[in-house]
Every structure is written in structure tokens, then in C-alpha cells.
Length: 152
Image 1 (cartoon, rainbow, N blue to C red):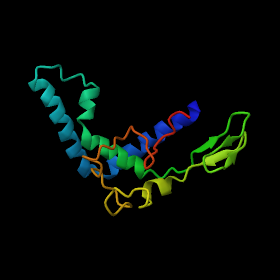
Image 2 (image 1 turned 180 degrees about the vertical axis):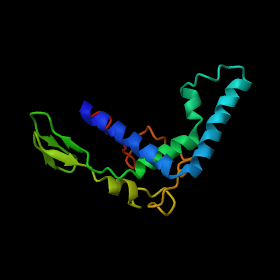
Image 3 (image 1 turned 90 degrees about the vertical axis):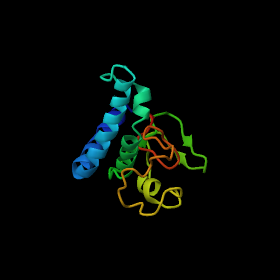
Image 4 (image 1 turned 45 degrees about the vertical axis):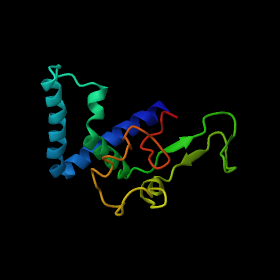
């Protein structure tokens, strides 16, 4: 699955860069947020050239932008193959035999209002700061967000 992990990461990065290039009006706001975090470090007499994990957690607009860009990514064809020699039985009784592929319905996951019930309307519209203040990080997979396969 290493190949899939690499392909997923690069595909998500391309989607993110394309989104930023297509929405230059959001770049200024994202840069201002980064400059603010860097300035806070400088004001506290800390080396502002080195950002750490705590600094990245303060970039909530950037995190929201990334999550929304991933949610809108149109690459919905990541098969997962049962590479074991045993059947895999899912909780609903579906059997995945060795060598069989499984596809995840990402459209349903990302745009179905019954799955995305805690989001406001206009799920089809790209809203870059939709997740600010929602405790839904771009790096955390959940039942309503799966931008990558967690290496499995």
C-alpha cells in the first residue's frame, strides 16, 4: 500500500495547490494568519523562523482550507485490494475475497447531507473556512471525512 499512500498524498497536494491557484482571494487571508502566528513567536522572543506543532495548530484557517479542498477533490477512484489469503468479512456481512477490490463512495462521504449533517447548507459550494471553530482537523479521519487511507 505504500504506492497508494504516495499517490494519495501527491494527489491531495495537487488538489490543494489547484484550489489555491483557483482562489487567489483566499491566499491573502491565509498569509495574514501565518504572519500573525510568526509575529506572536517574535513578540515572545522565540525564534520565529522555526515553526513547531503547536504553531501549526494555531493555523486554523489553513487547516480548514486544506480539509475543504480535500473534501472537494474529485479523485474518487482509490481501490483497496484484499492482499491477504483470507476472506475479510465486514460488519454488514459483506465478504471480500483475496484479490478483490473495494471502492469507497467518497461522493457520499463528502456531499451527502445525511453524512455531513453538522455542516451548513451548500455542501457543493467550496467554502474554505467552513471548518474554523468546528474541531475538525484536516489530519483527522472520521466517519464524515476520509482524505486518505491511513496506510491500510
